[in-house]
Image (cartoon, rainbow, N blue to C red; front, side, top):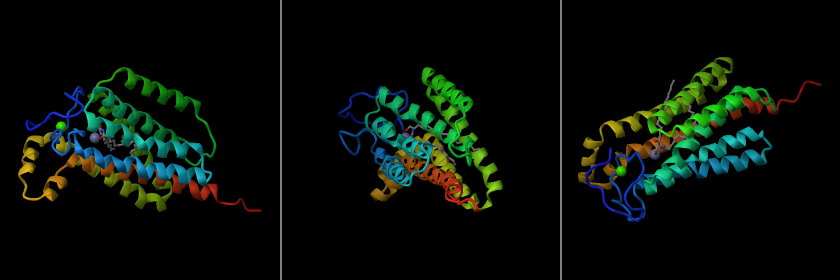
Length: 241
Ligand SMILES: CCCCCCCC/C=C\CCCCCCCC(=O)N[C@@H](CO)[C@H](O)/C=C/CCCCCCCCCCCCC
Ligand SMILES: [Ca+2]
Ligand SMILES: [Zn+2]
């Protein structure tokens, strides 16, 4: 996917097995792919969300969900350096975080329950992806986990219809991000001509991988709110005396 106008930079020759469409070291000598700044949406808001969830005294697994969404840190390091080690720091936490999301959902509405079987299954899944560090395998496994979440959330909103708008908004935003991720990968050669666009706005707007970060980060954040909203009324509904 790497275009031919790449430059040399601070982190040396890329050793990652993936080099995304954005031209390397064009904006900064110290940042290989400047689209990494879009990862801030998966760093700052989830940290704030985790702090607020802790202050509200909600279950640990919801704090873990917000912390899991800070996968932007790994993605930032990966896009900034294009080093293989940073690629693993990006890809593996994505699997671990999504496993946390799956766990949260399976125990939806069952306060303070622990499903040891599900924990064992998700651990086995995470170990297999960690051992077999192949990007396509990672992407397929990640997609499978997200598909489980999507299917589960569609089922949940049939039971709790008031959560439907939040669920479908989250899904729509996430899927739009996935569409742009594919456009960036498939049409990279055509997108390379964006450097000739008259204004910087055009260059920014066509950084579709950056929009993938923004939209999936937002979609995932809304997904956490989905089960927080679903749980919240239960947690705060006083039993009839
Ligand atoms: C609508 C519900 C969505 C809930 C998702 C909850 C998951 C939360 C955990 C992490 C979110 C992070 C997502 C963005 C990661 C950004 C890092 C990044 O860009 N990494 C790339 C390298 O820079 C890496 O190579 C990306 C690989 C992902 C590619 C595969 C995406 C599959 C998308 C799944 C679509 C399935 C839809 C199924 C519908 C039934
Ligand atoms: Ca690149
Ligand atoms: Zn990325």
